[in-house]
Image (tube, rainbow, N blue to C red; front, side, top):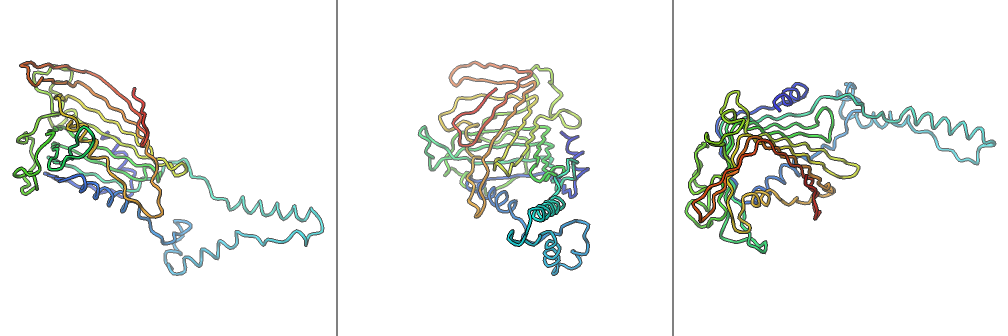
Length: 357
């Protein structure tokens, strides 16, 4: 994935790179994330300039005289049209055929050229490097009927060490293709299914401390680096910094088909050397259920724009990982290791079915 980023940056017109030694992000509720998402994705990214663009990038005369650009363009385009004459004025069909042939030739000459298959440069690439980062999210809690419980919230804490976020738009000159990549050498996820919103320190984020890899107080470890006693092929080779293998790799491909108004999203996730601690939760308090519910946001309507249908293809790859299960009321512990496991799923928005392989 690093090789893909380096090759993409080499052929990109504009590259923005940011490095943060310590980042602590706090999202108090789902409404805050939904507002940020719509302002950035739907408002900012959908903005387009209404100013006329020059016919050719090499036409510097149109750049020197911006006020006359539109007039010059209209004057040049006038040569592409032929005078329409009534068929009554012609005495023979041959003359009409000549005119039609002439119009066909002119139309063929001025027909826009198809896009070349030669890959062009990407437009913008953004790289965000984080030495240590922590993201705290408060999720809504729902009961068995799907109704949100007021006065309570779930909590998720994700910790990242040596992480890198990469985004590129107009990939290789393709205006409808973009990529998003995330790499983390070490990753940890902590969860609490339900907590009172009125508890001290939970109603607001009054104190923001530096991010660290310490376990948060009152949180259950959910996904973390495997302990030394877990025997796998990649034991000791993942998440140690330097040249060690990365624990988490995520790649997302975004492609929009303007003709069918469909957006294809391909997600590939690879996890190495991690342990998932499985626990039994009440309905609506599971960590995966709360994560999916938190990121399932509503798109604010945009005047004159129809949102495309979403088709998601998910690929999950697990290497040298383990599942730790501890029953609630039994003094037992079970550990299962998985060396290689892959799963693929196709999800279509607003569809009751999905394909799982």
